[in-house]
Amino acid sequence: MPEPRDDREADPRGEIAVRERPVPSELERASFSGGQLRGAALRAALLAVEPSSRDAWIDALLGLGEIPEDGPSLPRGGVPYLPCDVSAILAAIDLVTLDARRTFVDLGAGVGRAAMLVHLLTGARAIGVEVQPELVAHADATLARLQLGGISMRCADVRSVALEGDVFFLYAPFSGAILDEVTRVLAALGARRPIEVITVDLELALDPACVLDVAGSGRVTRYALGPRS
Ligand SMILES: C[S@@+](CC[C@H](N)C(=O)[O-])C[C@H]1O[C@@H](n2cnc3c(N)ncnc32)[C@H](O)[C@@H]1O
Image: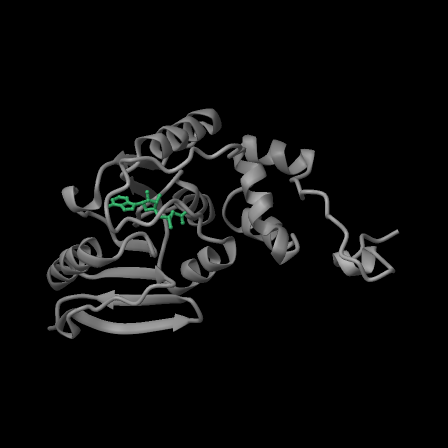
């Protein structure tokens, strides 16, 4: 018998039944551990999962488990940890150029989930910058357990890091003075060489002089920055 398509179909009385947490199959887990479930294969497996279950499916595949509470190291203006949803990450990937020759940087990376997913889907090198040491420790433990290379975490306030990379990702990680400073640094970087900045649920007040193009769909915006010739 085919699987019911959603919870309402599973419940003829019209009450929404509690759905079992979706988990990857044994075959998918084995293929992921063996390094085959990557790139297009991973994307196909993810898209085969019902959209509302994709976040839980990825969490289970990565084995993220319990996430530490936010702590006192979160600076004023910093947004507490909240993972970006898979649908927005997929939309972001579709708006930029990412492959093994390029570096993706998540500014305010939490437990490295978006950085890991982007690396696994595109092959791009990924760097996560995160100010809360407990979240970085969680990310490093995940990377070690999964034996994932190509992704690294830096435990630092974004304002203290020299930003290097090709695609910068911001899932509304901070506001106020921190956002103003990071926006200025990204604009200065973009004035020197081409970069792409992807934001989710965030509009950047970038100096128009360095913005070559703005594109977006819904909550996700991509800014192409670069020197004007
Ligand atoms: C909304 S969460 C985004 C998490 C991650 N990008 C994701 O999508 O899964 C924001 C993260 O930014 C971090 N953060 C806030 N201010 C920061 C700062 N000044 N430097 C580095 N990380 C910061 C927070 O600790 C939090 O983990």
